[in-house]
Amino acid sequence: MHLFLKQCLGFLTCGFIATFVHAGQLGAKLKLQIELESSCQVNNQPVNSGTNGLNLGQLDFGETTASFNHVIETRLTNTSGSGLTIQCLNNSPIKITFGNGQNDGQVPLSFRTNYFRAMSNGTDYLAYNILYGSNRDVLKPNQFITLNNNGQPQTLDLIGQTVNNGQPVSLGYYTDTIPITIEF
Image (cartoon, rainbow, N blue to C red; front, top):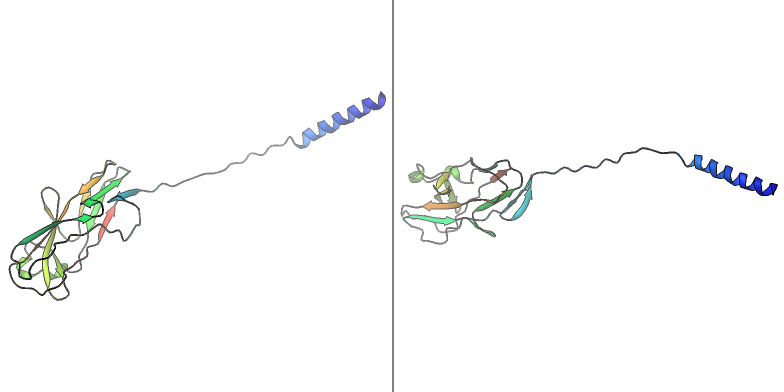
């Protein structure tokens, strides 16, 4: 019995010592973080700050004679329909800047009073404007528009307007490219 008591006491002592060996604690922290940046959808395409090369559509005046003598209008068309539709989740204003076109300094003299942009086929130039909104205001080079932002889609209707006075110009495909910056 004495041996049995010694063995029990030995097991209790080992268990007691083992408890002390594993009784320590360590306090530690794990840091987690995420940075959420502004993002928007432009014509149903997700974009974020720094996105470049987004195709916003085109103003296509179609075909006409080289000596047309009137104003031709067209609306911006793109894959999502017409106009420029922007939806940003934050509530800060949306600023859209329409930069200088490739030929703005080449508007034909007879149209420089009322027209501020020009398309070219590499030889000749045709005057044109971009109009926006229900008042059909003219967007001059480097002009910006500010849209109020409430988190809902905002659509900016854009209209192209080109003109000629019957003076023949050379045949060909007339184009221009305008850089557009959207700040949100």
